[in-house]
Amino acid sequence: MAAVETNQTTTPATVQEEKIVVPAGHKLMTYFFKTETLKDEEGKEIGKGKKHPDVKVAVPVPTIEDVITFLAAPDGSKEAKVRDLIMDQIVDAIALAGRAQINEFRDANADKEFTAADMDLSKLNLQTIAETPKGQRGAWSPGDDDFKAFNELYTNILVHKVSYDPKKTKTHTDHWKNGMAKVKNNKPVVGELQEFLTVFAANCEEEDMKEVEQTYTWLVNRAAKYLKAEEKDFLQAL
Image 1 (cartoon, helix red, strand yellow):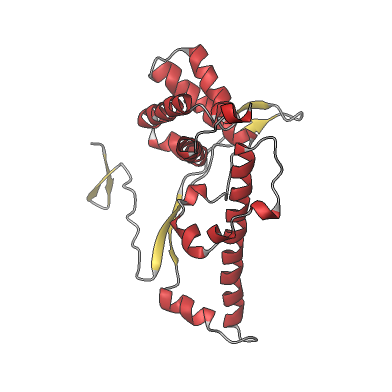
Image 2: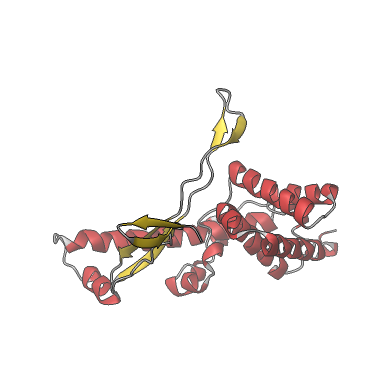
């Protein structure tokens, strides 16, 4: 290994990643960044820019005792603002759970309109929401740019690394773009697509996965939801 002499001391030329010490009352958080997309004046993509390196930092987090103290804060106190912040986050979580119900209803009933009477209020309590996997709480869904980035990486891995048929791979990416909406009632197809997501993840480099992880997780959760859905009785509707 190459070495650099400094004041009669020999040090390795390679820089070791600094180990981050996480003090008590702190949590290590990693902030990921996507590669910048370069666009021309018309908004067309012309290439890729730089990717900001990950940022890892130990941030202070409140203890359960701290949260209890904030929730018990009297009106008008400085701590009451933190109490209100916590309550706002809880209300937002309930609102997102309600939105998830609406989206699920619309996925299953394309020909019907959702009304207030269709909302299952018993599922909007904190216990039920807390027991729901984070990725299924309706908090986020991919946009066009997210699907584009995922499909480019998916195609590259399936075609060039797994040596899968490019035409069939294109069929997969078409399904990813619409959230598998066209095949959601065909469980064998959804199950097969779910397996291809597993193949993709198994062959994807960690650094590349960081850029598309939200979209990947969203697709995996969506496939799982369709596979668990009750079978529709189409004959009864005829």
